[in-house]
Length: 146
Image (cartoon, rainbow, N blue to C red):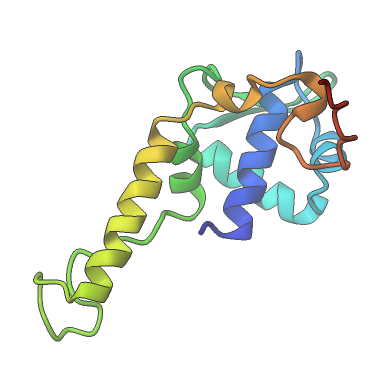
């Protein structure tokens, strides 16, 4: 559905949204289980697209450039690896009249964009502490109540 790079970017953004202060690449990599070299490139791209701020020096690191209540999942994905849409036949056979296959693929991509556009980063954080969406450790099963 989305690339691994886009997922890593989302993990980093969610992690930063859940922090009270700037975090270094090493701290983000440890907290999200993203290889630090790969993460550095992702953070650089997120900085270029003005989704994160970077500050050098003592107490430096990365922070979100905007509030998690304003930033959508779609904005993060688009900054890294946009969802592929079909505006015309990719084989050049039908022009803008999509065949049933490419119409269905484009409809699915639009649905994903719509869902991601309606979901803010704060929506992802609106979960109990042991359910944060970073997938770092297996979560213990919740007790069953009768």
